[in-house]
Length: 140
Image (tube, rainbow, N blue to C red):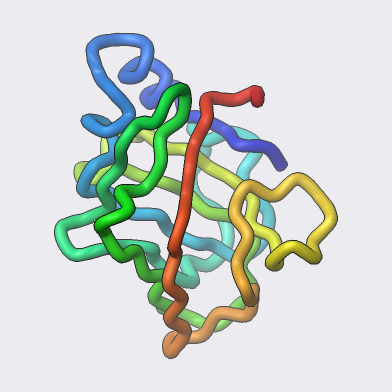
């Protein structure tokens, strides 16, 4: 699947809000299975992990894209057993502002993946450092 943005996120980003003001303090949730056909749909699959940081994720803008702050360590922490398939970026206060994207394995996966992890098999003991992340309004 492609990167999908919810209606609520589009309302914010096209109105008075910046990417950082929408998602600073938020988290990324990792799910099993295929992502929903719309980011407005409820999450599907099993919640396998969360990507977070102390105080929530922090973002900054560079030119025409948003990225993680280089000074903040992001960590994927496993919550359940399963295979990662997709993820949802959400605000600290859940108001329906989401960005959904597919997950693939390292550089070896063929397909339309927006996040690549060194492994897809997640367990409660899984811990992965996320060193870089970026977002560009789709389509690219």
